[in-house]
Image (cartoon, rainbow, N blue to C red; front, side, top):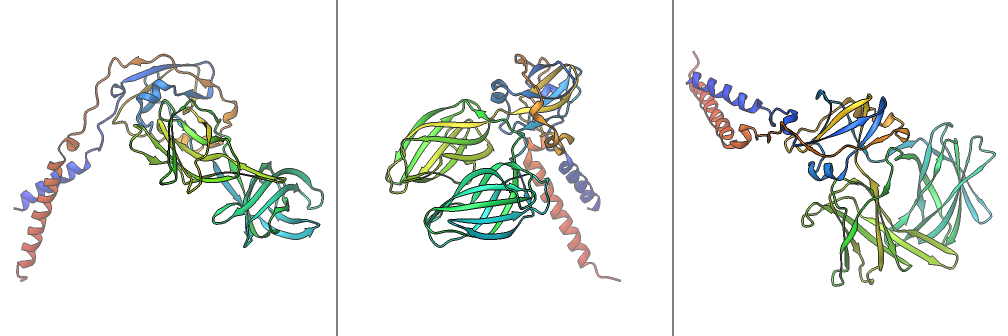
Length: 410
């Protein structure tokens, strides 16, 4: 009995310890392309539509090797969402200067980059205010930086963050002028530096393939076909014919146009214009990799649908970042069982000045002559055997424990 239980335990641990995926080699990759490198150093390798069409949705089945098939580490870019670093800042002065409300922020030292500030605003009524942003290193002489707007419209539409060109000055002064509504009071502020310099955004190929207005439920839908999966979408811009509107927009993504996943939290588009005041935002931030199809759901409420004349999707094409020497390399792809690689480069890719790197295009697609379809591991093809073995082992162990518990002690 004990010998049988021991054998079952050994068999159970052996089955559990088997790898989840079969051992990988390049014969499991169905296609490859040659990449020619003219000089040493870091460079980009562009992933064209052939590669994107054949890879998995997560792009994990990509390998880069020398001609001798030695693996080369790479980092898929865009490698992350834009990074935001917060700076310890405090309000050191607030005062009225005529019809302007002045707020001075101190970052405690110069040399820290910042380009965004979030304001904690005390206001019980709607307001629309213009903000002039100034910088200084001595809290005495000030330099104009930029202008922005802040506002709040009930029930829950507000903009209380300001953006400006990157500055390293110690002090930031905000000149806030009420364009409409009451003057605002600033209770607190946060200053940060938001960096997305690693991403070069461009207009992505895509076309609107369907539009629908559900007046009963107050929803408009716009579906866009990007032509291929894998693009990194930074934002979606709507061109709207009209003014004085504000709508919530939700963004979804799909590879088949039927099953959709949400890409981002709800965004907002608006256009306010009257007298000498105007505020416009028709861009929805996404900052995420997308599938082939995008769907926009515009919440109209009881208002008539917006007249959207055009939709522009901005983002970037996935690329590989790698440290290469002059020569020819091989880009392998299309292996459904490939394990996502993890390289050291992921820890410091963001430190590399990628604005000066060259972009290399792969050659024509070739079929791997050594290709063998990867086989599903035996334990995955027969999961019931593992489950049955575990259950039997548990029952036998339980019987042994109960049997020992019933043996009288001497």
